[in-house]
Amino acid sequence: MLEFGQTDAPADDLIKDGSEATFMQDVVEASQTVPVIVDFWAPWCGPCKTLGPALEAAVTAAGGRVKMVKLDVDQNQMIAGQLQIQSVPTVYAFWQGQPADGFQGALPPSEILAFVERVADLGGPADDGGLGAAVEAAEEMLEAGEAADAAQTFAAVLEEEPANAVAYGGLVRAHMAMDDVDQAEAILNGAPAEISEAPELEAARAMIELARQAAEAGPVAELRAAVEADENDHQARLDLAIALHGAGDAEGAVDQLLDLFRRDREWKDGAAKTQLFTVFDALKAEDPIVLNGRRRLSSMIFA
Image 1 (cartoon, rainbow, N blue to C red):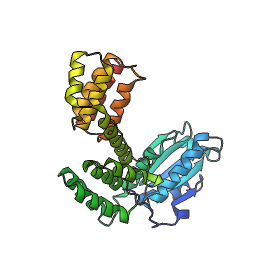
Image 2: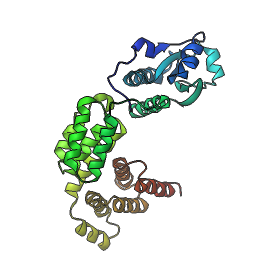
Image 3: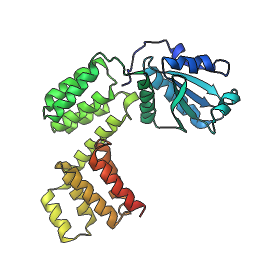
């Protein structure tokens, strides 16, 4: 987990401009103890101007668990050639002298944060003063139906670490579990800017959207009867999917949305697919409902 706000290492040591002359010291040798991210960029590269600062912010937020070296490929062509840099921006992560991860092109902020966290973890998990254990305990409370206790624990974590995306998402979900959608949305809207696009907050945002929709969808029994009376009533089927999700039947919602997509994928500008992605976003990526739903959707798209 990234440690936002820590200042364990000075900024001028965390992030520096590199060169062929200093590459061995700044990257290969330094990565023996701390993972090093190398940003290959060029002055004429538009996406580099966005990616570079975002990487620097994420590296700074990691509090010394990862370092960053910026290399202008025009000025360091030998290193770029040795590492087979085909285009910029290209980012490599080095650990113990060897490339360990990387990507090409620009990424959204949430993926940049995830990349830096993944690289930082190469050097071992951070000592978070027990906050990780507190978050796990809060998650267990939430699964056990103790939403109020979970909310208090998540809130306590955020007092210590205000930009803890996992705790922020958990606090939103705890209030959702207490049927307090307005408070959940207020909490989400107050999240720090640097984590506003984190996966945990994106999931919370999707949950709130689905809850708002469910409040307007109508009773499941009536909508199911409408679909059974006319299987081509697409609006009734979409509303049924929304109502099913609101009633806790995510799998049933996905089934109805896939059926709608199969019948008319272009209806209402692809409403079935859009709603499916909202449901997927609200669940964990490894949830069997998501994995199975994505597989079935892909088979329809590419059939």
